[in-house]
Length: 556
Image (cartoon, rainbow, N blue to C red; front, top):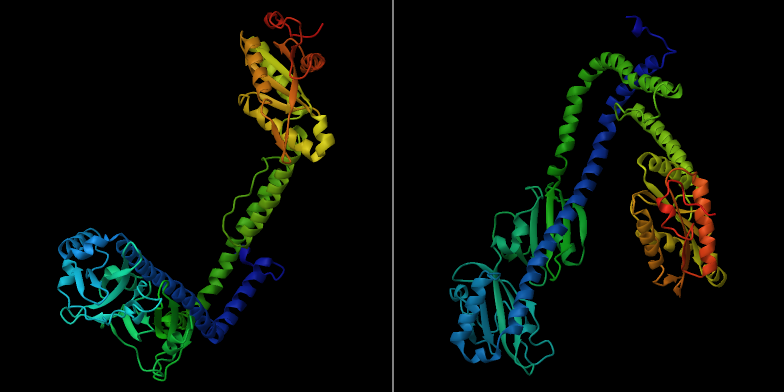
């Protein structure tokens, strides 16, 4: 085939040789370095994922504890003190609360300070009587002779002998109106119910990962996502090195090596609102499984790939370079003005595509620069309003339209009053702020089709187009709106300043030039200046009469 001649001067030939060489080198290099790299990468990725997901589970459990703590506090503070002497009514009240809000799955129990049961909900009646001091309460919960008496807390988990259900008690004090401790309100939650530790069982962590919720104070396992008892003792010290580190205060992720060879990736985080620890363990065999599968895939397919790459690269390189030739031809046509300037199409997101994107960015920057130059040529840099050039262009179009449609055009020439004192007293930057605020206020008083332009230091022009037979009335209304915008003081650099404006108005119907109409409004403005601040002056002493003539309203 003529297109496939072997030519060392061709970039296609050089790319083919280079590609085949890289394939041979890569096939050898992958077997040497990929294993080590993938192991580190997989450990790093899984460490971040394991710690993130463990934190998520810990926060979920913390929210469940906060929800129960909040409810128990609300119930204890709102429990009427007189009900403590009426066990039947008290028990009915607690049962109603438990039925409406079954947050505590095993019910609520009210104990006196001496540990005598005062009332319990229906769900709590099937449990063992709570002895005193109860194994689910800490010393601080039952110590009535210290400053810690009656503080709300999480008690020691225990297994109810009647139901064999592991329970977590939470205790809140009940005070009378004088701040005296009267009783303890205890909420009981089953540790093996998904409603409490649901996040421990419903989690995106791989099923091979083990989650363990630990109470370091009691050295108990409170729950796990694997089959087994929900409440059990921790291993003896020295049997679980990572567990010992977590109990000693370590938080984070670590690769743990075990003598039996079952290495694990371990993570430990604190459960908010408690001293509990959540430990996650993921066997490294699960982590390295993608590496082993990839290694087998490379070994099985490298030989076959070497055979087909010679053919694929030879034919494919020429095909892959096709978009580059197409992009170059497209750019040539734009340079010859055969087609307008526009971004080149990106066929593929490869090096050729990146080159095309770079060309498109340069083209976009060029077009933006042209647009910016055009904007600067037609806009006032301080206020962003149209300047004299853009105003003249719009006036020309408006007058041509007025002549065709037999409508009217109005020009309002505004010059600010009391502007010079702001510049002299507060500085030119204050004057700039004043001009920007004036422009914003005037813009808000106009229609979208009207034009507000800045034509001088403190001079503005308003162009009203497509006015009908009520042109004079409509123009006078706009002029009054402009005056009204200056009624409220301006706040400039923290100072309240007064500004006003003098307005000159000229009307035209298309029979005069933009310059003459603008000059007429300018002269009318100067006459309004002589009349005093905040005045409106028309280009004729009787503005109503000229507005009905066929020619522009110009000064005598």
